[in-house]
Image 1: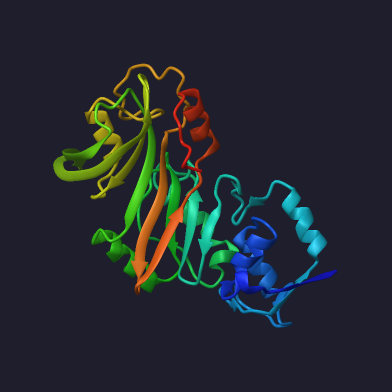
Image 2: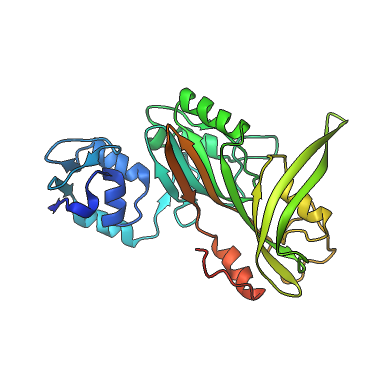
Length: 305
């Protein structure tokens, strides 16, 4: 079965993969790429790439439409290399010719290490998204931290994004649920954070701008914008002021975690940067466990998703 759509003014100059998600639903990018490659999705009866911009009155053909609807009604899982990533936990926020933006779930490392059996780089090496390239890591995100994460598709983009991070041209916003009630509703933390490298003590300057979104006598919901990018920066700074993050077993201001979820309540919520005068802004939906603890702690998050 073939179903035809005619592009209207609201979708003019939109990427075809974005149009598919907006029209049909949240389909994994890999499935869209495969369908385009096999000709199951055509624009004006021609094969196109996912980055193709559709125009007013273009005719989009969707082959096997009933089959696609049946898939969408199931709980979709994305399994590029025998390690399942559930779509409701690790959504592809954007996928273009130069980079991929993910909503990383907690518990998955960005890169391999001595204690990491699965990581995003290895998982996506064999995915259809990187069939003609390979993933490049351009920044860090702790294994326990969820949220927005970038992977470059080519060396040139990787070098560009890495440079933007180094020059502090990439602006990140984190959300955290922490113990206790912060005294001030906004401000900045400037600290000398200590870490050790092969037994050598290293002191690094760290700066974060913060704002309290909501608070009560036992908990606070914070928005934090790190200016520097030190390892475990936000976790250490909140520990230093006696308001550690719920679920943080490494930096604990409290001996008891009564009522806290086992997950680390730290989420990379938003990322902003600019390339060639074009602004890019991405937000990662809050995990269900994060929203659940907000309700338990009676913290309001009306403007968040």
